[in-house]
Image 1: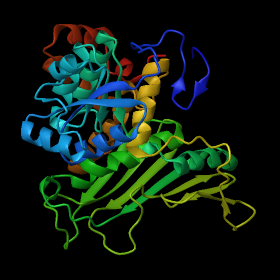
Image 2: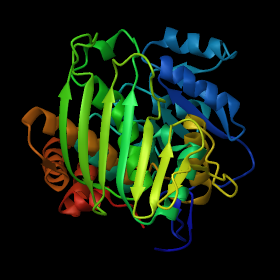
Image 3: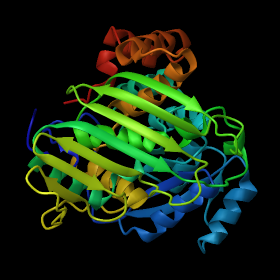
Image 4: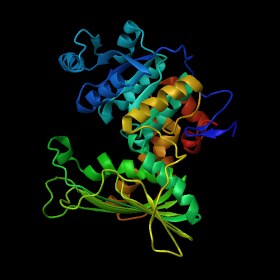
Length: 391
């Protein structure tokens, strides 16, 4: 490592991406995507003193204008292209809140226009496209950070801190049971729970364990009463790089006594157990006592909350050069867990993550059309370098 470790990871004297000098003025940004999640991000941008909303991008200009009016800025510039509008209004960064299928083209365009990008999860539609974006970030020298917003929870940080009292964690489990009636595209998805939700818990597990997946075994199913076309329930077991096992058990069609949106967690070690209900401070139970002791949040990092935390860390990284938690190379493994779980459920077999990554790498080489990005991909000589932080 090149320096001390803070909330955001290693701090190097030569950051692997271009920084933006802190001139004590808000960072001008454009938000790409004026749908429901786009409007949530517009609210976060408007609430933050760190950034200034300079424009809204959407292929539907009427939607962009309506979103501008909704935040009380009907005269805000709008456009259909991120790079063009950013240039017109003097924006220094892009927040990409498009649908997953648009993550790759929109982010690539912005990076090559010299604009750092904060993108909604997932990093891209596929791991192979995620590897392409990691290479694009490298060749342009621009930061691409993925917003895994549920990492930004002080109680999650407290659970991780509390786990140090139970010895090395060997067992981690997450139960997730909700019954949302979304309507629309989620009801018609092939893998609604795994594709649209479980990536949050998979990413949180990587954070809690400081480990990456080695293998995955998963079964999907759809209870008889489910209102989803695809399988709305799943059970998965991941072997992690520290030898731990992470189990996920979830359903999106389980009304009554529902869990938190963050899931309900159990961490087991030699000397005790940490429980976290996903909403309140976690508790610790030692081997010598069944009494649960609530966490003391004194001294626990406050990462802000949800997308507000993502936004704060993104700006902080651009100002300091500190690697954020969601740096593209670090984040690809969270999407890889989703792809591995779906492949396992489809084949009935255990899936090794190194094999999935290498297949994705070969696909990225075959599909890449940008010569500079292709050159970087080829220089890696395998997927391993594509998912390692630049430290």
